[in-house]
Length: 339
Ligand code: SAM
Ligand code: DTB
Ligand code: SF4
Image (cartoon, rainbow, N blue to C red; front, top):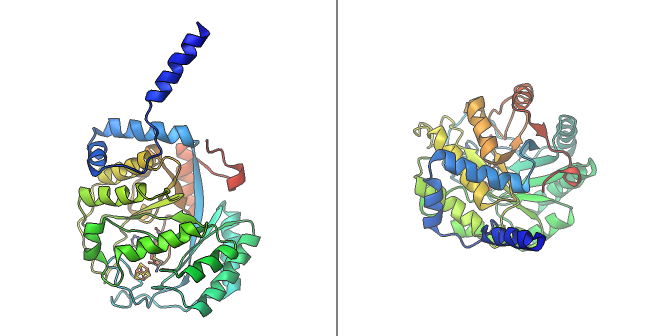
């Protein structure tokens, strides 16, 4: 009798499709994305609970270590030198300033410290200084992440040797919509950098931006490319466009919040073990929208009043939101309760 029950259980388990896949078709994703909202949320949340404690959110802190005057033409970005956004450029900041910010972040509950530089790619001299920053932040007991643009093989190796945990490099959108947004580097350039990072043994942080005037098919196309990478990124930031005066995308019609939530849900279904980050754009989201994103599978945020150059909800209002939702901050990685 027991044996029969176990066998039935096994058969049932066998019938459950393996949720970790790299062979998704566009058609499958389109069908998931178009499910009735309750069915999509149910599926996403069920996958979420299999791999994570759904009430724990990982906390990252962002710091811009080199701001503005960027030669690239990313149409969303206030840091491109091509647009008049009124942003004050700032050269690479001193190590001490970075460490002060990292200490504060740790005291506030962050487990990861992400440093961003407005570069097309780092020069070797600049990289030397970033390596010192990584070593210093790591010594404080924080996970480290940097986003510096395109990398060479040698630079990637040196970053790994410095102890870097994550490299952020986004695909940003679908391959088809990409040329509407960026012309100064190709989609393939981005895939090449991501491969270098993966091959060097650094964790990959890769996602994109929605609300740039793209279609549902583009949002699905972005997630398809992420999900069908040889390995899923460990961290997937989903940014909602922060519209900045002076950038070409300022004035883009606002995306329906429910479409944003569907995008998060689909990302969770496709990449069950990834930390899906509710990234830029939270200042414009209602508490109820964020709550639905956390239900759909988002389990990471940037915490603190500033992203790189734009505003983020202040720490106090996020603490209140977490209290109201019964969410807690995930501990350092070795203490995490992920399943
Ligand atoms: N310069 C490097 C690069 O682009 O590879 C690293 C820094 S760049 C600011 C990092 C990411 O921030 C971009 O890939 C983009 O996804 C996101 N980002 C920049 N401006 C944004 C905006 N206005 N709204 C939402 N996300 C934005
Ligand atoms: C990511 O995907 N989002 C972050 C981080 N990676 C580096 C950046 C968001 C930037 C939002 C605009 C700004 O503050 O300049
Ligand atoms: Fe430069 Fe990065 Fe902004 Fe593009 S997203 S303009 S590469 S800082």
